[in-house]
Image 1: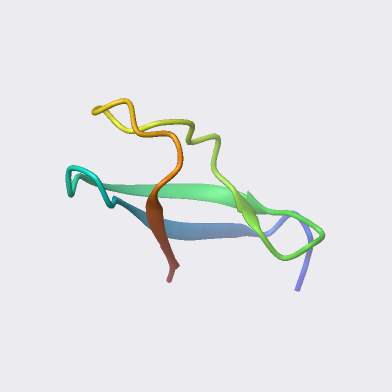
Image 2: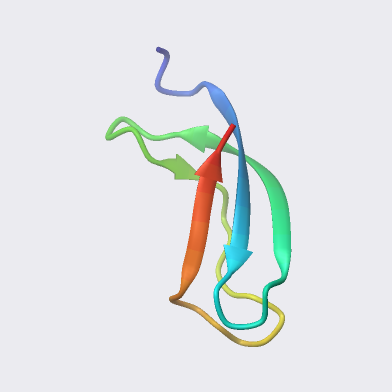
Length: 52
């Protein structure tokens, strides 16, 4: 895989249940960087992240 390949992820907040569908770039370590920082409920830590 290319390190700059686009990937699509679903981020679900474990606090309020809000879901976000985002695209990001794959980092060399395999993680996807979307720029997502916090949920609408101010949660910054507790998320379920699924790539598809």
